[in-house]
Amino acid sequence: MTFSTIERGAEDLGTNALLTAGQRVIRREAEALVILADHLGPSFAQAAGMIMAATGRVIVSGMGKSGHVARKIAATLASTGTPAHFVHPGEASHGDLGMLTKGDVALVLSNSGETVELADIIAHTRRFGIPLIAVAAKADSTLARQSDVTLLLPNAPEACETGIVPTTSTTMMLALGDALAVALMEHRAFTPEHFRLFHPGGKLGAKLLKVRDLMHTDLPLIDAASPMTEALLMISQKGFGVVGVTEGGALAGIITDGDLRRHMDGLLSLTAGAVMTRGPRTVAPDALAEAAVNVMNERKITCLFAVDPALPGQALGIVHIHDCLRAGVV
Image (cartoon, rainbow, N blue to C red):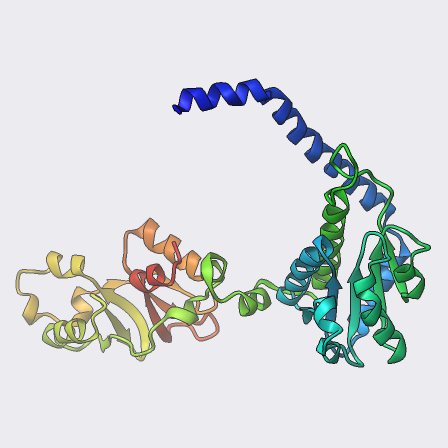
């Protein structure tokens, strides 16, 4: 079968109909999210306050598609400063209920509110006085009636034409979880630095790395009065391709490959101070490594000395472009 044959087959199935179905699903779910936003009331603030007051973790649970959403909500909460953990309701009935203890808050998801596998978790929270937050679509459901706070999903049709596939309902659950996580994060004044602590790996971790995370503290420094023979030896020993020049202990200049070329005649008879370029560009240790890379790219240089603004002239470290690239900072 050739590609053109497959393509013609797709047309026979109704390419336009498939596209229309996809657009309808997305629009229907988007409309449901608008309804959800307008539907939020005091119960949302109560749920957030209950989580804020907890001394333990948020234990998130759900079955089936709601369970998959619950896993994501737990992960989002945990990564934004709210300790959280997912517990599968089936495993909970076989020992994992021990993960839900006093001081914790249970966040349980079920569109119908009648999912039988959740019975043991609900009973456990009631038996031990553990706060229970429900996410359900029916106020008179077992889950909603037993909960301390219920986040009701508004009446919105599922995205499929049959109305039976969990689509719109799970999208609203996911959005509610994101809303809780972000509201709690903002209330706690959760900063990018906090976020980096929970995301040390991957592209996100690299973007949030600071200069102090990558800088070297064994610095290539030499006094301005030192002969260039010592400066060349220092450049060779440290391996950064540059040497910082100090006057009275403060960083006053830098000697690069370009400075060496410009002073080739009689180079070895000169002092470091005579060869250096004064006022080198520096970076603060707490600056993002990404910002340091931008400076190096703009200036077409390979190194930056890290100088604390509170300690003018005192070099605390040096960061090389290769260190940034190895860490994934581009």
